[in-house]
Amino acid sequence: GFDIDETKINVLRSEIPDRKSLNITSHRSNLKGCEIFIVAVPTPVDAHNVPDLGLLKQACRLVGEFIDPEALVIFESTVFPGATQRVAGKELMEVSGLSIHNDDSTSEKGHFYLGVQLQGHLLYSGRHTS
Image (cartoon, rainbow, N blue to C red; front, side, top):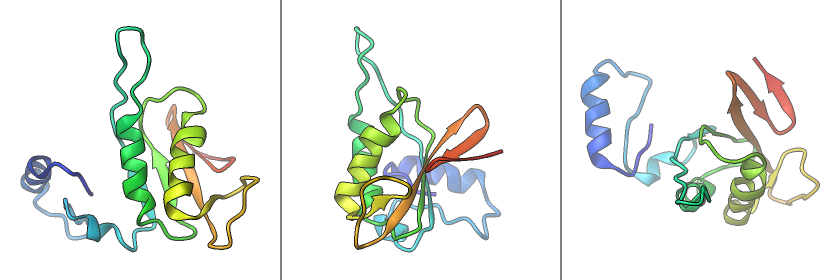
């Protein structure tokens, strides 16, 4: 697991003492080589219910630095319909140079899979799993 907040990392480390297959870190370099990224960031809204997508974009730019072809990026954020593809996907493509699998765009570097969790089901790049 990764978080930019070292305090959260320390809490997780103390609450999960037996974590042989789970590396909990705040070091960005540990994201290199990961095949699956689960992005969970808040999406606050202002007084007019307009979402602030700044944290989502920031997280995408961070993950985009480290995704390799065939990686799966799943979003657990409460964003409006279409935001995963139009906002998060766009940020990931710009930073990584990869394209979204099943997207009309192509990249010589390869593609990644984009997913979202909806009502207990994972949807990714046009596919649905239970």
